[in-house]
Image (cartoon, rainbow, N blue to C red; front, side):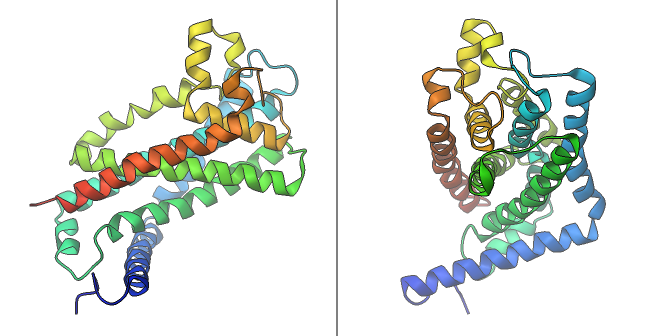
Length: 270
């Protein structure tokens, strides 16, 4: 019996949630059979944090503890990286015909994508927990209380939610697993053209302006302020309103890429 479009609006929402959770459990089952992929995804940002903290250095233009400046920035960077796993899974399903089989079933349209996003959000929570633990081991601390720290983590997950929809849309556009690496390269400039490793004040004027309006910079600045770490504000409008921008940017990106991804998914094989 078809579940889509049955019953009242509440009933349809219920079916949509059920279908999305079914797809989420499918992705979690895949991870249970491929634990190495999950472990690599958790270890990679830790390696970046250790490398930039001890080998490369960071915090240019920052007064105070470099670790307390770097850790919040790396938390924001972690939310933007790792999209290749999502993109690869989507393109593999496309090429194996899995998506076509799902679309032929009595399933709410888009549940596959929502399930994919939800599973990756759960992994993102684990990644934040691991990175926070490593940061604490390195000497990083938050100073504004538990409520502010939880708000900072919420902003990080909001950024991740938006980035995952961008990744899903790019995967649907790429269409093939071999194209994922080429598309993933586009994420790196966005990540490094931010205030994760250095203050915009230490950069040329035009570059500092670009960096400050980067969505990742807004989240990094906002969480530094909430954690009570250095680098929370540089006196510019973007820095002074970082918490507002850290909400507006992900919401705007989600509003653009979520419907694009769902629409493209619905048009597959037509």
